[in-house]
View 1 (cartoon, rainbow, N blue to C red):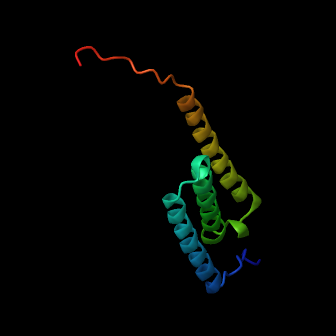
View 2 (spheres, one colour):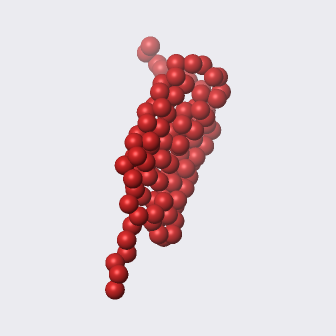
View 3 (cartoon, rainbow, N blue to C red):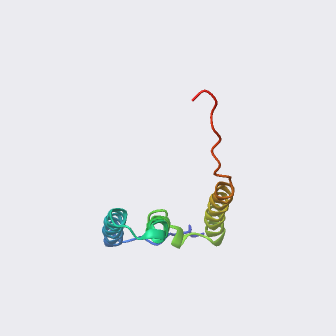
Length: 104
């Protein structure tokens, strides 16, 4: 009976991913220094999602995992998006009326 063998990831793959993460970190710094108006958050989130996908697929070995493990990771990501969306819907619908404080 043969044991389940995972493919061995070459060291150069880890080096390439490390360099890509460093480049993305530099892009994040550059994006933070520039004003893109409404697109600031979208650009930052796109870079962050790309970096997270690199870490998930390469360092956490999700690309060689079973479908159930992939489904669990996707469900966790979906839950995170759902929680952030719910929080932002609550935040955006609050009234911005500032009531005067007596005594000030």
